[in-house]
Length: 175
Image 1 (cartoon, rainbow, N blue to C red):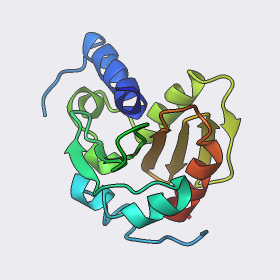
Image 2 (tube, rainbow, N blue to C red):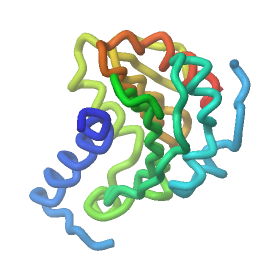
Image 3 (spheres, rainbow, N blue to C red):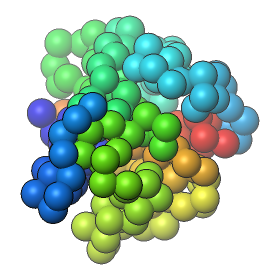
Image 4 (cartoon, rainbow, N blue to C red):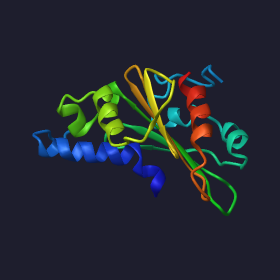
């Protein structure tokens, strides 16, 4: 599923690379909802936006978000439209420095370095004025805000016209 190949895929590749390099695998412009510290769990990430927020932006009814915790320490919330077709999905993945896990933690990596490595993989990405540093591609917006990395991804089922919507939603969450 493309939506999960964004930040989660990048972090997995980085984690595997670090494991091979000596790491080990041990363990509006205002914020609409709780801050990143309140979103320290995958359930908290699902509280950053509501299905109504997504419906207002994408024009389709969304169900409740489904939370998950990634091996890297990132937390994700995935929303899917209630419409049968074309299916639309939206996700927010949040990686906070204090939540780094596994090879990322044992290698001494930090969220800012991971963000910069991921950004280097997108040479055509457009800079966005959010957080400390941000960039956008047609279906993703990545934001580094302090020691927290936010990844906003959408798949609309009929194309990649999500960039402006993702930037609006990112501004609502990150501020």
